Amino acid sequence: MVGMGRVYAVSGVLLLATAIGGVLLFSRLWGTQGEQGGWIFWPLVVAGIVVHEGLHGLAMVLCGVPPGEVRFGIQVSRGAAFATTRRPLSVGAYRFVLVLPLLLLGLAPLAVGLAIGNALVVKLGTFMVAGAGGDVAVLLALRRVGGTASVMDHPSEPGCYVLPG
Image 1 (tube, rainbow, N blue to C red):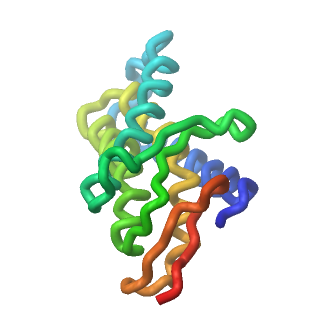
Image 2 (cartoon, rainbow, N blue to C red):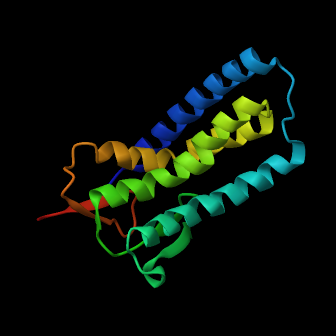
């Protein structure tokens, strides 16, 4: 289990690092010009959150979880969307489930936006990296867990149980 304080701290560090790094790299490559997105930015962030959780669910299915055993929801008290399963996964599969949205919605758009000079895509990638803060916090918590371990999502908190065996 990973405490929400740690999730918020990791998210904040990721946001600062990608925002400062993204702005510096963008301005160095493209100057200060660039479309910021205006009103469309926030609807795209909301869509990104939905797709982020969908990618977690897709990764679970790719790792052998039957689609009917993947659950999605929103924990209003924390302001957090989630995808979960009660099925145990190998720690390697679980890491894949955690990292897929970070790669596809955060780091890839950030890199593409920098490559093509699109500030809106850089900004969206930055927010999606920060939005993966909980996933990164769980990845960090699992860094010493051996590759043969199995894990199972915690039913109500960020993180997972490492199963014996």
